[in-house]
Image (cartoon, rainbow, N blue to C red; front, side, top):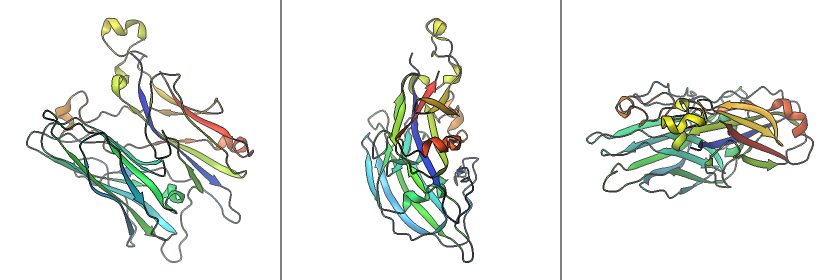
Length: 323
């Protein structure tokens, strides 16, 4: 059985050395939920009133078509904080957990899975993500898309709905805006985003970019979601006994590997998320597993390669999965 790991986002966050400005590393993304049925705390909020940009409102997810939207850069900066706020719900009925993504300018700004309903109980939940580090992405109008594939028929009757907005908090008087990336590069299936299935250890998601010649720090944010025949990779066995044990192969170890021009540059774990329908569906219906509704990316520090990346020629950044 082929391993199948979906790398949904490898966002290449680049920070340039600006004159007369001291840079410190961007903060680690903190992704939480305001839903009372999860253990994650909500995002901390500024005392100021945010400027709000609605990304989409009451979208219906009952098939596998993409749902485009337009992001309008209508909130003037600088910003103290940028928060993605999303509200989702599913009608009572029968339905599997589904995977959801939100993309802006080809960059993934949300990745998670959905809760499962019961025959007589609907579900609703809220997700919040701190996107302050991605500030350059929001300074111009961009195309966006939300992908939440869902089967609705006579058997699977639960219909999903969702809305999302960006909340921009202004910098208080006499304070400075936080240090963020100066440029953000997408690494996805195409210009509008999209996840990429890596079917074996030789599969690579990559992009080639030519960076400015004054790179000071570089980071890669990676989501590696196990799915399909490799969803429960931590229970897999060596290939030579997979058939006998009727189990997945590849062994019980997975690791996302990052390369620059084919040279190893970093690693990222494949976190053992248990989705709402995983192993024991009834256990995860009242309280979803940690991080399941809103995945946390792993940030790979590529700063040791800043000198190489600053030489003014194209470089290929790739992600594969060992195991």
